[in-house]
Length: 351
Ligand SMILES: C=C(O[C@H]1C=CC=C(C(=O)O)[C@@H]1O)C(=O)O
Image (cartoon, rainbow, N blue to C red; front, side, top):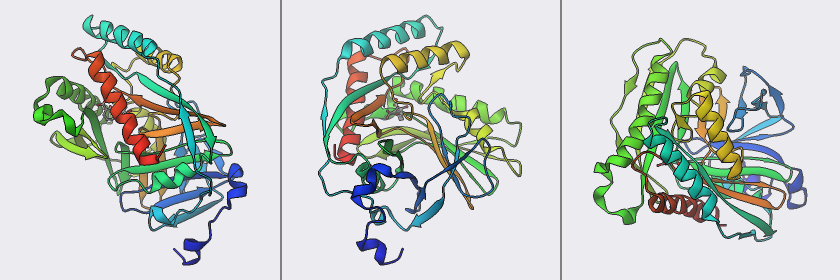
């Protein structure tokens, strides 16, 4: 972008509380920044727009058309940032509630009424100084290979960098991925043959494959299960692809795939979804977590699963993390995995 952008913040610090911004960094490194006021519509518009919704898809007008869109060559060019140091004090976690939810889910799985569910453990904190909106810029500087996303509206918002693509539609092709099963580098080499992690992953890949097959289009191409590294964690990833009809209904595609069992439940029926929403509420999961966050450009539509991020409202800050519970899940192992996931976020965003 222009040289001026390198030296002059586009939004000065004293008006940061007024910001109305949505942004997404695509794999080519370019950052699409939309500035409000946003026009909200129910169906995908012809021109560029963001898709922003909550986990329950409760927003009937999820397409947000910015008043102005800017494309930055890279995240470093995003200069909406204040001088004051951001400081958040985190409350101690209380494992009891999460443990109770864990046990209930596992019991349902063992009784074969459920195959998998992803409860969310949320660490809560309070901002002491600085501006939460600084997290947008920090997310946009996250390592390559992650999709950085963010939305700030006045004193509330969320920002993060996720390894998980919900769907990409480009040139008549839909691409998606199953991303589930986690190890950290300290776990040693047993991950590739860990049957519990493989099961957790295969449930997600199978769900996506059958959802795409139900479109009644061409054959769904399913790649091999591969190992993928994302900012200090290792996951299993399977890529899937299908050719689409000419003008797909993008909102319907989001609803078809979301929530996959990587953040939701299997079977994905009314009863299980209602139970999942209840657990999320009890455990203070913020609405953005695990929700689809997308961008439509002249080249395509890109929607990610908003994980590995932070949310805030006023001074209240939340850092959510989820883990898939299957029959072979053990509480202490999942508790540690959740901590590792949050550690990657706090390293990345510096809070
Ligand atoms: C729900 C999260 O991760 C998902 C993505 C990759 C691996 C996952 C897992 O192994 O449970 C989760 O499905 C999170 O990071 O909070």
